[in-house]
Length: 454
Image 1 (tube, rainbow, N blue to C red):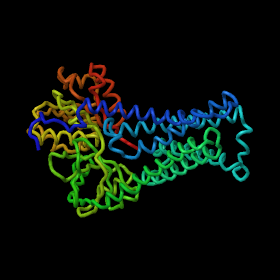
Image 2 (image 1 turned 90 degrees about the vertical axis):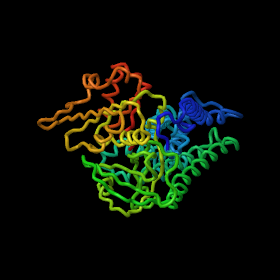
Image 3 (image 1 turned 30 degrees about the vertical axis):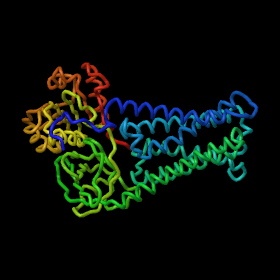
Image 4 (image 1 turned 180 degrees about the vertical axis):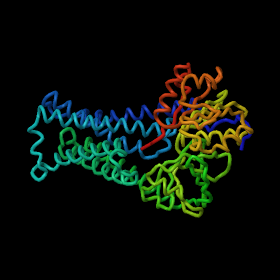
């Protein structure tokens, strides 16, 4: 353990290497999207029927390439999420999913408008199987994005959504591959069929790895709940201890997928921030607020319960800025947990750099970790600012919302070049980001943790 802030970060966390890693992944992604077109347009090609026909086919292949990429983006592959953070990768997955569905709808619409006879009859009992497979795939992909985007308004529980998401994704991609190979145009020679068979094999291997191999490895390395602490504000911290190997390559501010009293094969796991820091030992702490989706059960967990974790993930860490002169951390509600993890790391290292923590809550009773945060001011150079939207009578701290005047009162001029770390409800984070930029803080100095992955 290091006791000063000059310790070097891990090799992959050095900023130039992180940027190189990110650039290589972007190039790899672009190549993966281009590969189907390069292979399909090489060699002998079928004669063109019309521009609309060829354009629609191109949209279909583009949609398929995007759809296959989604399995890699959601496969929790650390080499893929490391440069960007898992939350950013998941957000990118959402946008690409919509893009894939739009391309699929355009592919179908162009045929429907200009080449309707090629679609055959819509009755699946009479239509050619490969055309029915295409429609099944389109329907499943539509259901995927709709149930994901509107899961909460549709009142679909998280556990049911995960199972539905997996089933729809497998059926959709299987049907899409069947549709492409069944139609045969642009895929009728061995090299082009090998492309799609190779894509299918890669997809199957990725699915086996994420849904079978990873849970099996988790089952071989269980953890045990050793404490359940009430932190105030409705937040409970579950401390878990390793019964086998401790977590490796863990950094402050990261999160992990947690399953308690559930099999790691069950899909009943949730992402939570690790609210302590690796500098404080092998035990992990997850601070959870009961807001539905199984969290009501988790906060009542008794010591002794079996737990499984998959992680760590995320890039919301002070370790990404080893040369920073200080830090500004803005949190709302339970968004304090990754902030707290980073504060624990600075505390354990006796880091002398100044930190300004602005913590917003609705009322005084909603403040979590209040005593712990207050005590930290004795061990690190921390300015702690509580902001209450609905303050009680006699409240001496800040009230209202985090606005420009509040930030100007508490952020010293030199902090404009410090990393600004934000986590909390989306509207609060968006407003704080806009205000910070208005104050002259560069976008590259503002990092926010996405509050809700799903």
